[in-house]
Length: 268
Length: 318
Image (cartoon, rainbow over all chains, first blue to last red; front, side, top):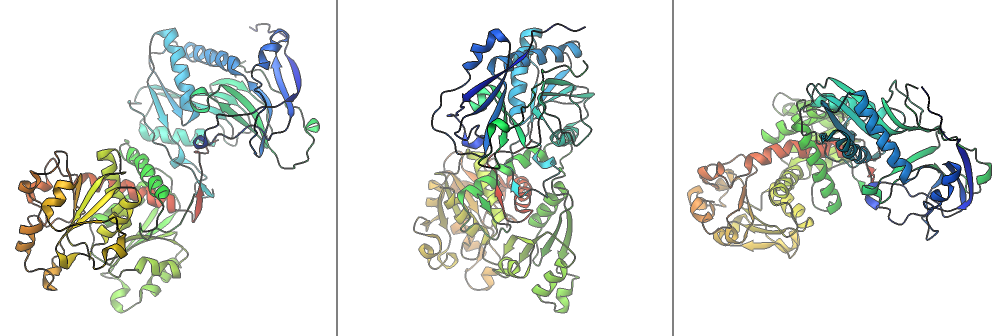
């Protein structure tokens, strides 16, 4: 069964300059722009074009940063819609929320899990328990990395025995974070089943790991990064594709256009 | 922030680094409550524990911390080693390093032994007590215990009672607590106080001559172990007299703040520096200190592993 969707078209805006005022120093989030105009690639239904312009914030003082935004993957509205769909999918595939518990990977996985829990509460009138997982101690690059991450405390205040755990993260990339999270979860107990829900799957897996619920798949290159911004930590909702700037004089117009694919259930 | 690969003492360690160690230790405390209280963080790292001096708590605590982090640990104790054949400290450790180890934890009767090792080894060195100099992990675990109990260190009034002059625990506590913004006082017989206090610890260190005054002032009292050999060296008339003047008793606590906290680094001479009943009372956090010791040592080993390095602002997972 396939529902006909409105034709998707690419809207190119020039110049569209993003700025970010409310960046928190402590959360490790990276600034979005380098102070220069760049190409912004939108996914948009023809009639909704104007709405999207609202997310282009006014140009102001810029961060001097090594990242530039290449595309807006989700604005606040599409992020909300995607979260709603994920909530429905999780409840549908588990036939309710009876035995479910959510475990978010710190920091943004927890924020996404909280949003999903609210949406599921509206659907099922049942508030799912939420655990938080810091996977630092389980990383496999601990002995190779030059920088030490700051550790936050995990908290799984419920028994995992016999539960269906939905593990939640913002971006699925190499799969190494998920591998570490699976190891960590096993030290907390033996759940019946673990499912994985991610907001963005950006490909480039290095381990045989696959998400059960995906907000949106995004084709990316290795030099790019996906930045998920959430209101509680970043002051705004949105998902952006950013790229590290290596050569200062690179011509933005020559940069390859990145295809942003419509999110879909992996079973489709 | 750049952190050193060694931990030799708390003197001169930045507030930010101490905060980071305490915060990391809290994460490890959570790890220790899990059904499987072990993480694979230091898998493949080899840590050698060199104990040239008798120790129960510190050695077991380090050993447990290493096991909880999945590091391989080797234990060296002076009895039955080549030290009794006359091998020097430098030769001993250089031979051990030739076996490819990553970190050394050292307890030694000579002040400065840990610092000396940093000059002949590539490996990171963690001081587990050197003579009368410092015992930094004890200072850190005391701070963690206080922070948990009071929710802050800033402005907290901590009195350290006993043989200050010969105590590495006192020195680490004074430096660490003052860096963290606590008010610190010392109290003890004049023969057991350092000679030039302002030169050693700055002008902010308060000195109480009477233990009653220290108890009235303090939010927490850290009672040091009276090293029994001090009496032999003529610094004390008798243990009984020390106990009468400086022993912490229930009677003396009557004038204290109601939620006063009693700490002791162990081992306790019951009835000398601390009334036996008080060590097991509601005021005592002595066993919390021991629990926190493992978490603090895990944090130190974790943060100091992998050489000198920068600490990220975020948690950097992708």
